[in-house]
Image 1 (tube, helix red, strand yellow):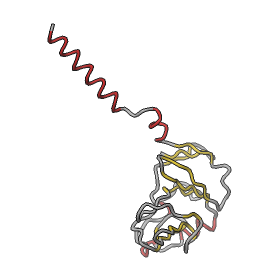
Image 2 (cartoon, rainbow, N blue to C red; image 1 turned 30 degrees about the vertical axis):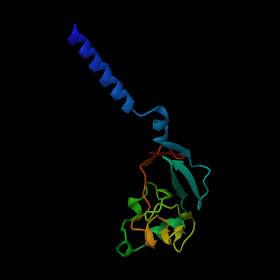
Image 3 (cartoon, helix red, strand yellow; image 1 turned 120 degrees about the horizontal axis):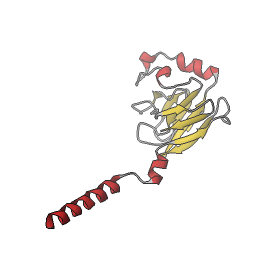
Image 4 (cartoon, rainbow, N blue to C red; image 1 turned 90 degrees about the horizontal axis):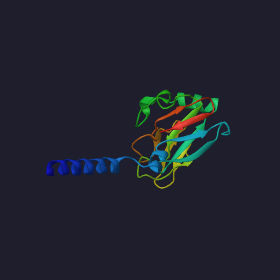
Length: 155
């Protein structure tokens, strides 16, 4: 009888521990963000919040795409072609946190038409690649996918 009680107690303990480690519904809801991009005008950037961080979604124009692809990648601090940073050339999705000290850069600003971090002077181009200033890496590209022509799922 005591072995049965011990086994039942251990089972209950492990079930409680495992359930306490499962993500709650509010945490799971923050894990991904669906947005409708149909109202984002070409040439503009919108900022959304995902997992407590700003995410920049830029609807790029043909001129933006040409500019992003015209960069000599060997001259970049963190060399990465534009094609590796986007799924659809018209849309750039990056986490809006400067890779230097975690500030939030300003969109549509800086020497390269992308983002500028006024805190320490980092400049990012239209592809979110660091071009000037102390930032060591490009703006991070989160995991994302297009559900259809107008709906984007981040995370």
